[in-house]
Length: 465
Image (tube, rainbow, N blue to C red; front, side, top):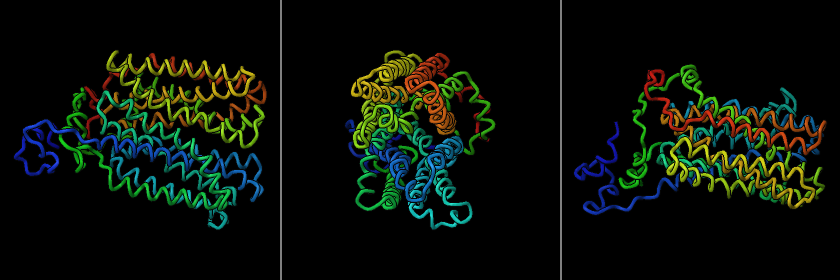
């Protein structure tokens, strides 16, 4: 069992300690900042996932024209990613708890980067001969989704280990802000590469960037701060100072998925997971239909649509970290349960109101700004979900966040289909109003979420076996 940080600080004769931990004995050492470097790496990894998630949406027109795919066929190719992404959330979270996020994320980045590059040669792969060209593209996108499905549960596991209990909001918000960063830069970056070197080059470039990031991640990251050679005792003390959990760390093989399922059937977990389903529905409006809404409904030009289409992601990039800071501040002032709830409720009520304003406003500029801010406040609130996964369970936050994100992405899988149905039969205003109602419903379910609960305490099903 690792020596507690307090023991390391008071035992200067222990030669097993790194030199950096022994320096400055007799005076208060300045904490290192490695945990913030780790958080910035998470932003980079998260942004990469969205570059690889959205690149086909940008290149889709060129692929559709070259291979004469129908709109319906292209829709199935695009949706294949979401299905793979959703299905691998729970296994990905379990892998985080079993093997640690350092190794799992390294393997995941390499996996999806290889298949992202393979998109460029899909017509020449055996898959195209065996199943047909459209199925080859769809299978590759499905496999990319499987790899990316690992990422966020493992990222949440990193936050659980590296950030103290009162800094989990800002920790989670940083990797969630990567969604906004990746979403904002992808249209411009991919369009520029395609315009100069063709759509295939954009996929090769994404693959190469991913491999480089995987190497950096593997050599810099450690699963636990105590294992990192650059972390000193003062930073360890900061990380663990506000950890109030009395549950010992699990040693050995974690419980099976079936046993975790029995534990995760509490009211807090059910409210958390179901509410994320509704939030996923609203979020995927921006990942799928927003650009076409601007061009087809608001009658913007293609160039205007590209520029304004990045506005929701820029709003997410700005407001998500603000939400993380607000969540942590509210926890310090109101306690975990009321603190997390208050920030989530403020964000979701604001988002719902802005969705209604944007859908009912004739002026394009005001409407688009309102809709973009609605996306930003979804990001503002979303930090609460991921922080509560760590609040509820210290050892199995990977599995819980995987379950939550799987259900959220199933909501995202339904979103483009149901949105199109409502828009076709009742108009786009009603489609956006419905998303706003589901956003409020997500907030209502938070009455059942108790961040003060500890799933491990007194529960034999979460003991190692």
